[in-house]
Length: 617
Ligand SMILES: [Ca+2]
Ligand SMILES: [Ca+2]
Ligand SMILES: [Ca+2]
Ligand SMILES: [Ca+2]
Image (cartoon, rainbow, N blue to C red):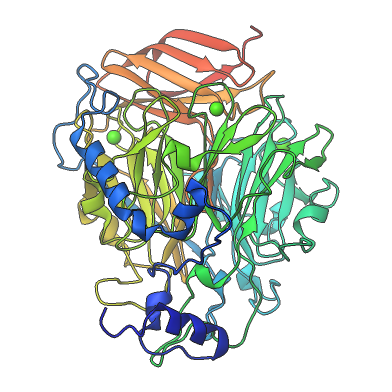
């Protein structure tokens, strides 16, 4: 862009004066940051850290190679299960919920204001109907909910399309500037508990099983590690979290994703002569993530350092959980905002960060992108979990296909996703089979991180569902075609997934800044048969988080796994959903529990929730 005064002019100006010269908007999110080079560390990683743009040709070559070389895993035929046409059968009807994200947007544009909007779908009262929880903002100056409009909200699903606000009786209104939410039954009592991640304050809620929750943040020992300033990194801004049993002892552990070092300001940090908007994350220092081991007595131990997490400082935005190398231990993929992604490989006693070696540190052109929401699931039915995440306009929604040897290769271009997503910004993302044809599709809740539109880059956007076209490895983007223009475009944030009306078609709930929340009821005509697997762990954690499930039916074989860490700042609690296409039964359902137990069920009828209790051997 010709009017740019150059990176260093912007950079110096931003540090020293209130207003940036015109053109410094380049330094907002979509800017490539000018990296500083540490001459002492000439490792492969440090060279990559210093010169990401210079390595673009290398990444492009890699992308081209993956485009041209047929991947044995990508394009295998799976018998009769093929989707030949891009024509959508996926169709959603809009339903509104009386909730809007109150992010307290200020003229100075404080960073948390644009990051609010997490959602959870989980059955809090055990009646079989998934309920909806929204996180909400607060007064940005004080980080306190000083008005009822800032309450977090719990809506009970009463069936027949009725959702009742039960926030107050459930005790979930909250107190701070909340962002993310993670669902997990950490005490294995059969009642789903909630972790709410927020700006300088996070909360653990224990579900008492009678419709109410208790704040146990202090009692659990987490308060001392989450809600007091870190000696090195200051007050922690938790963006999201994941419940995952990292050591397979039957107790869910807590991984907390932290974002930036930020403090409230009445003066805009990023302004041009014309306007003020949110800064690129490069203006802030990052923070390390945290890992807490569940001790089984209601308390947690901070093992961030011992497990190799704390020495990786990032700007965490999204977290996906899957056992990508099938060694029985759950691994973690973390998107960092305008920085390298992390892939934490679980060795059983600690995590090793292997994103570079696995090929998932950067997207295909080697530039830093604003990695946001993520889902880590098998998209091509070869049993190996793949990675899908979303970013901003002109950055693509990258797809990394698991090659099976600890490596991934990027298929964003050959899958068509690059072309389809270049003009979009996404926050939330989830891989679910919305038309039940046996292929997981991708729903993206869209909207830009900035508050002022630029040419070709509107901040308010419609949501989009990408239909997985099956064995050819291609996708189709469906927006108006899927009914998603029934709501006006918005700055959508988190999204979460569940079957609200029990018809076997996965529905979606989406939060948006300053707009009413959307429930997208799946009304796909001619959707296939389906099977939802609800897990009851015995030796494994109660909800079987981490269990892998293989389903064989006449049309083919497919895989999924139990995790509640899906999308952006959001959580979706099972059951694990499979579309079966024309098949009225599954010939085999095979469950690989985290305990190591493998359980097989044969001739399972479709179109129902199958509850499986972990066998003793
Ligand atoms: Ca519980
Ligand atoms: Ca693993
Ligand atoms: Ca599908
Ligand atoms: Ca439904």
